[in-house]
Length: 169
Image 1 (cartoon, helix red, strand yellow):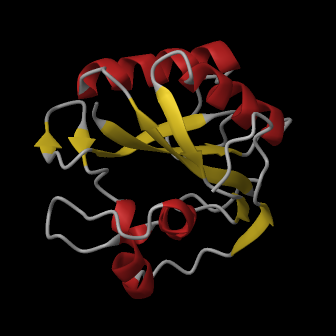
Image 2 (cartoon, helix red, strand yellow):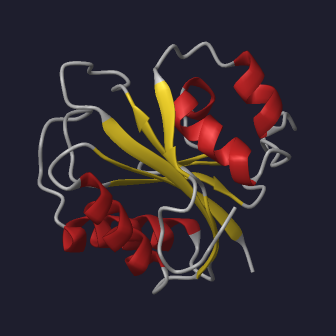
């Protein structure tokens, strides 16, 4: 079964509750294998907004990439995401970072995520659960990418076992 890496974040309202509800919903579209530690991070891109809670989920799914994207958007809506400006505050954000060893570029989906190498808030939690995961673009590991990441976002681990169903790193 294909494995997918999903980045998860929230910076509006009860951030932790939104994240937990989203992971609960991810169980309906596949098997959650690992939940990375929870990090608080300063905003990336548009900086004039509240800090984020971020993590990464490693899961198996039978959904094809475009179907997975649609289901993630459905989960965002179900959990309570409201339409706002791009890169702005959000109740929940779910992004496909990797899907197995796939490299895909279409009008509505790019895998690996086009900016994953520049996002410490993605690479750090992913490094906690899958440091040897390799980019399908060049074979570089997550650990190697994290060492080279130039993102100066402030990132602080808050909790290693924040998801209550017993899934541990």
